[in-house]
Amino acid sequence: MSLKKVLRVLLRGIAVVVVFLLTFILLLIVIIVAVERIDMYCFRLGHGARVTAVAFSPDGRTLASASADRQLRLWRAATGRGYRSLEGHKDSVTSVAFSPDAERLASGAGPQDRSLRLWRVADGSLERTFAGFTNAVRAVAFSPDGLTLASAGGALDNNIRLWRVADGTLLRVLAGHEGFVTALSFSPTGPLLASASEDRTLKVWHPADGTLVWATRTNSWLDGILYEQSEYVLLGLNLLFSVLVVIGIFRLGRRLLRWGKTRPRAAPTS
Image 1 (cartoon, rainbow, N blue to C red):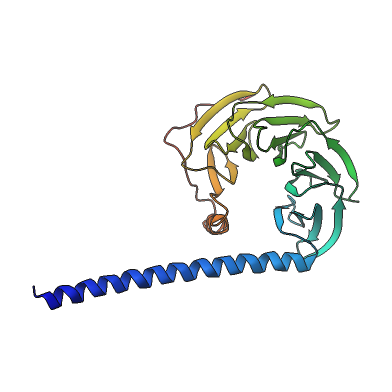
Image 2 (image 1 turned 90 degrees about the horizontal axis):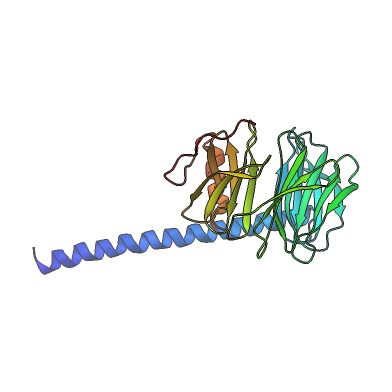
C-alpha cells in the first residue's frame, strides 16, 4: 500500500473520530440546555429555586414537587395547575412521598432543617414533625399499608428509621450502610424494604424485625430504585445522565435492569 493510501485511510479515520466527538459534545449541550429550560419552567410555575424531588399520588390526580426554595407545591395532574403551597421547612426540601391512600404527604429537608414532616393533602396542614435526625433527610417511603414511614438521613447519618404513622413513634433503626442512604422503596406485595446507598450497596430488609434479608454491591451508587417483586429497576446513576436513565427505563415499561451476580435468598413471609 502506497504512502498516499495510508494517509488517506488515516485521515478518514481521524474525520470519523472528530465527527463522533462533535456529535457527542452537541448532544451534551442539548441535554444541559433542556434540563436548564425545564428548571426555568418550574420556576415560572411558582418555585423560586431548582426542583429537588417530585412524586405522583397513587391515584394519579396530584403531583407534589419539592424545591430548594423550602416549599412543597401540589399540582393537579390533569391541568398542570398548582393549587396549594406547603411551607414550614427551614432548608431545601430534599425528598417527598405520598401515602398509599393519597391523604398524606411526607417530606424531608436539608441539613439546616433536619426534620421529616407529615402533611394532610386535603387542606395542606402540618400533621406531625419527626425529629432526631443529625443531617438531611434524603429519602422517604410509605409502606404499602400506609402504617409505617421509612426515612433515611444524609452524610454522617447512614441509618434508616422506621416510624409509626399514627402517632410518630420511632419503631426501629436499621443500621448497616457505610455511606448515606440515597433511596428507599417498599415492596408493593410483601413486607420488604429496599435501600440503596452511597457505599455502592443495595440491601433488602425485613422491617418487622430489622433483619437484613439480602445485600449486593453495585457498580455505582444509585440515585433511585423501584422495588418490583424480587427484582429492581434502577432510576438513575448520576446527576448528569439521571434524566436519560429515568426516561429510558420508563419507556421500556416493565423491563428490569439487574445489578450484581447473586440472587436474594427467600425472604420471611411474616
